[in-house]
Length: 333
Image 1 (tube, rainbow, N blue to C red):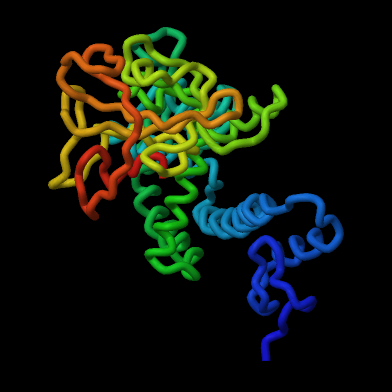
Image 2: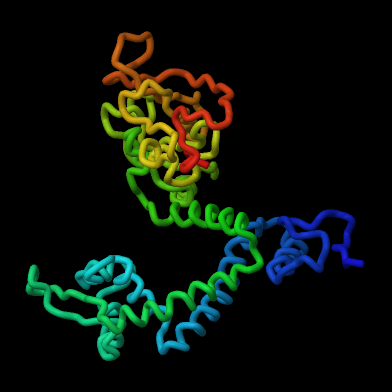
């Protein structure tokens, strides 16, 4: 029989009742729930698992690269040049940006690869102070040799997950990563809004003593935009988009940018209804606003350039209804 958690109550933080299903983090969460029940340790269930899984992955990946005399850092340079396409060359400054590293760190990596004739580094004819980095013939051959082994190894490391589970996990990690990569970007460009992701919004609210409420902070509103016409202001917290929680980039900004075959883009001037945005001001909820794109005409509500604001009237939409959203980028979800 499986050993069950004692105490008569379900374990906290989603810890399985059956101890045989526990991982090392479940034990940590159970211990803290006993020792400090006044604190919320739920983030540990995600952050610590990410760190521990990465430790296993990094070690297994490094072992494969070591078979070819490479490090993970070496291979990252090689694949960055390879995926740039012929002639597999780019300025060193651009390579530095692509890798997210400092100039000194990139130089050390390149020196090692140059000595092995995997890449070359030459003066850039377009700039006397710049260098061009290019993957050599032996470097291309090395990539073709390593890549299949590396990909097979990564597939093996994910063997505990089905194909659907991998896609679901990738989607959640994409959402989390996008929230860090878009620190302050025009992620809602078609609406004229510059938004900050949920973790920055929470940090700023805490700094001024406001309670935590999930959402994205409005950093700027472009005058004359749909957002301005709907009454959205700088400092508002957008909590919902079309009824779904808005916590990350890629919601309203994806509108009209991604679509699937047989589905319609929503462009300015399209009469299809726009997204429903729910915002909070000063910590208090305000009435949802629907942003619509339609030909300019007199109306009882406020209008700027044919873009009007009106109270939201949520309706049930049939599955596959193409109006407004595309399943490839379901706004705010």
